[in-house]
Image (cartoon, rainbow, N blue to C red; front, side, top):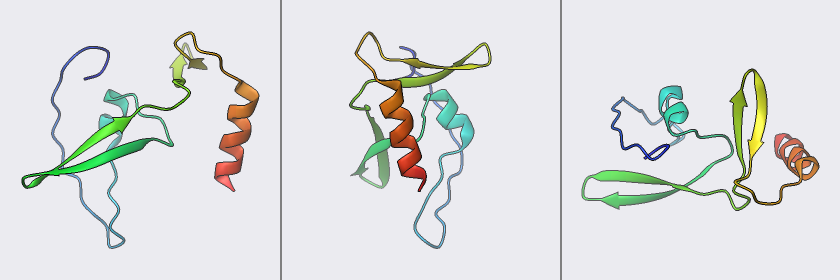
Length: 91
């Protein structure tokens, strides 16, 4: 469910030789997934269900009119700390 709307989407996802899979951009965009993002994986019968684990800060990075905007849902957010964290993750 994204933006309160239930939708379905099918696409082929393959696993590489290292055991990784990549969610196609269309799925990431539909679910408004930004990186890094955590999922909970659960095996149900012969299916794997991935459930998004909400970011602890509740902050979501969105693009509006060509600008990147952080939406926190009214929660306190320190942009300088967030930028520093992203820089450290890149190293």
